[in-house]
Image (cartoon, rainbow, N blue to C red):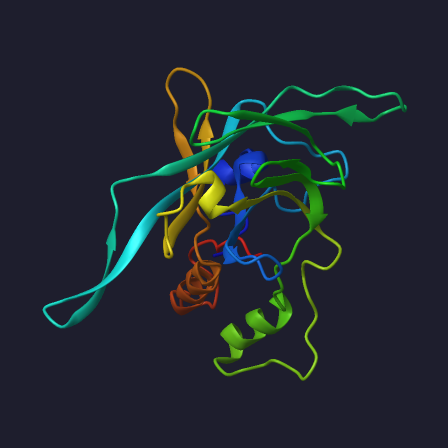
Length: 241
């Protein structure tokens, strides 16, 4: 799932803007799950995580069923939550640089400390954590998308140009050994979401997962279709990736 600049609130507070959520089995270590939550599109080199937010993964076991002959998924009531909180940054030794500490709270209540930007992941039994800036993995040939909308036919060439080339975002990567962290009887199928939630006594969810980026394309097409007689756009287009 991916989306960038998903609305006015996300644009005004980019640290809460979820750009991507990934969940996949580790390609190197069987029995381990990798979760990735990307936020803060077009992040500057000085960008840091918000100390007023909780960045959260939520997992629930899922069972594939066929009720009445129709395939479906039954989601278990049990939930496993991994909360990531960040302290206010403090000056580092070098001029103009800041350090930021983070804490991951596991479903068992254990708190694991780590430092933002450390290239070597923080390791505890069954858990690996990284948080920091990374290249934005999203690809969109925005010029070709816009031309396709105007011409109402595909306008993509053999080689695309990524509108997000050179842009960064902030990433939280969590790898966990399912049996060690969640229990031997967990799985094999899990549902996963990512959230940004205000911290404090009255938490408010700001973003949940990432809305599909195609939403912006649809909004722009609807705007084009609603042009007035003079050919001017009636409404504003959606923010692109």
